[in-house]
Length: 359
Image 1 (cartoon, rainbow, N blue to C red):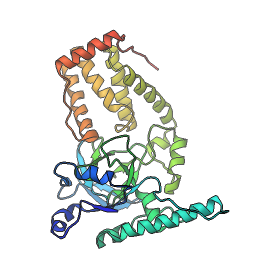
Image 2 (image 1 turned 90 degrees about the vertical axis):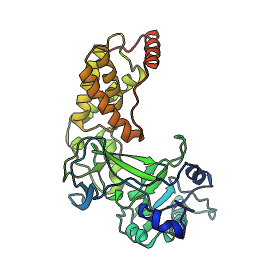
Image 3 (image 1 turned 30 degrees about the vertical axis):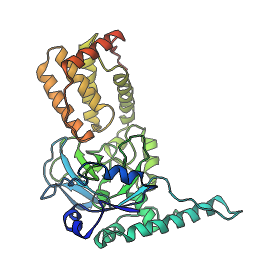
Image 4 (image 1 turned 180 degrees about the vertical axis):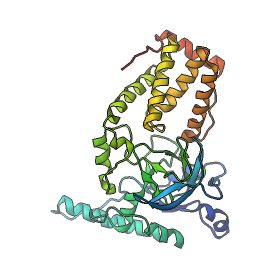
């Protein structure tokens, strides 16, 4: 167990405004990875007054925009109060002859004891706020801490290596954001500030409720509904209410696979531009800007528009690419250097370029 950022009397007043995370790591690798970041901890970026408020929603409590927010803009960031491994990280010697159900019960009980030690390390205000979070796992053997963790945890990448195991971060404000299969908010974990950052994926008006996705958006409605069962509600968002949504989604998935495998349309740039513009229109109409190849179609559309001389269109698409790049990576989009682009053109010609295909 460790606290990040490391807490001391001198630091509490300065860093405390950004919060502390009680972390349950297996070994010291994750802690060393974070503490090796130059300048850690960076300040958690936020706004005064906040761009959101918590209030009553048809889904219980929800989060709402307090002002107009442009697509790609940061809404807020928050440091977790609790970070835990995704699998239960304890080894237990079980008595002989017990059933699988009894093993699970023992495992959950022992893990709850470990989690109690983590929660006891929290600042009093964080501990109080944690126990005010929703718990949808009161009947499956989870204790009150594990139940809240399973209900409210967001997947976060602690180590820089994307192949490393994910952890679950539990947040106080972010846990109030409700689900939609067509979310208007995307998120990414920022390691230098040790915070989860939330961005608008399309323009949001003051008073609009903010939504993230709990289930994944690239799967059919039946699978999404199954994944949402542990949360105790049935989704009735626009995607789940539209009988044609899954058909349009399937086309976008095929289009995404094509643009990833054959991204350039050098043999027929106008045809490539036409398909990317059609895909962009579909993605925006369905509210899937955070998913399904939106970035890839924007980037290809910008390049193809430039190749056919439509410079204003290329500029508009490039601006959208830059916004997407910012909330996906935290880094500004940098245009491909002319020499690099020529090299990519040559490589694409050698492999036959991108072949236009309408599904």
